Amino acid sequence: ARWMLINWRRLREHGQIVMTQTPESLAVSPGDRVTINCKASSSADGWVAWYQKKTGQAPKRLIYDASSRVSGIPDRFSGSGSGTDFTFTISRVEAEDAGDYYCHQYNSLSLTPFSVLSFFAGRENAKPSVFIFHPSADQLSGGSATLVCLVNGFYPSALTVDWKVDNVDTKPGVLTSTKQQDTSDSTYSLSSTLTLTKDEYNSHNDYSCVVKHETVPSTIVKSFKRSDCSQ
Image (cartoon, rainbow, N blue to C red):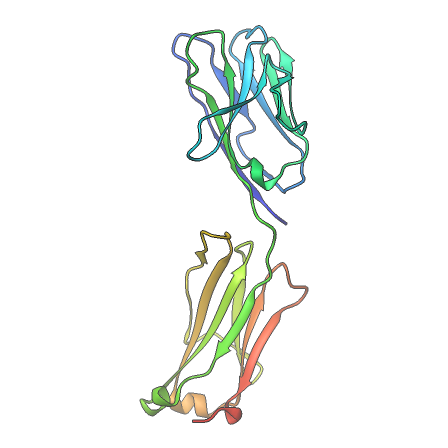
């Protein structure tokens, strides 16, 4: 699934109406319908607006007077409500909708503070690319053997890497790095190493890196035979 993480916080308008947004948290996928509720501590008389705030940009008003859409705003955005209960809806969430969403009772001169609900829009799922590397001759001459499995370009982040030696799962000597996220496309990468002594390495022939990810029906397996490697 393509998830979006939604968090919220409430800000109090000192001596004025308190606007509280719910839900506290919600996970959705692109294309889903999103509904945000905003409750006023006393009647807001319909003077409620909804704003979108993107990083590095000024707040952009989407809805005013509770239900009127600002000219040029896509019709997937809508608002409704009266009295103390108001609702903001995105009929089909798109990736470009990522940002902070504010409900605001504007029967005052101040445009702040807002009640804030933020969400991060996830990207399309991405299948990992997997590469396996056998130990170098120089390393073997030093008495050790490190095998490396590189996994790149996957999304979401949940992924497992296992090693098989002669088709048997092995755990000792395995070290898997922390997942790193690429800021340009939001995909993840990691590396996993299997470290053996030279004698241990030479006592086996088949080495495999097995990757499990939700974009793959079963597993991705990359392997090599020691006997095929020049030493």
